[in-house]
Image: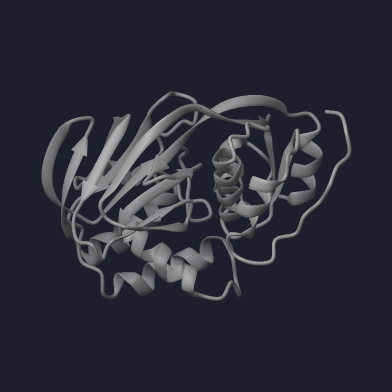
Length: 260
């Protein structure tokens, strides 16, 4: 790359998107977590820019860095960027918002809604586990209309997690089949799990073996539509998108990243 480099610090939620929209850079390096990366790629694409994006993971989740194979340590990741090569990957899109990792609705969205209201005193998986346990006390499965590439069903679900990459919540291997360069979205659909069932399944998410539970199934699609109660929150990369209905679609080779 040629030219000078500049550094910009974010001051508030949404600021990274504004900065990405206004800075005309040949290369963008995001120093932050999944939420910051989410804002940056949405800002870049809203401005029609296709600058390669590098990532130094410093944040609550950093699941996108995990998916790219970058070191979790910020210093090691920064050094690794020098040897990384440009790689085109897919993005997900839900209701006009691009996402890098996992978007979802149901229990997943309600946990994100709760965690986003909490101060970030602690980060990583501990914050999300606390959110899961707090949400589990009141949440019950809901009935939704689900359309997977034109196949429609009506069912009671605990959560629907639609993935471009496999991890969320700071290391939970929620959608093991997801790959960011295959031209598809993969989704995990959990049926009407009870509270005790959820507590039993939760530890298995870290190993990806929850998908073998009888009430959990995986699907692969290019477009997934979900409609249901308007109070249900849709999240993408842990950021709140809005209420149902939601349309999730894959955007093949939409982003260039620096990755090992």
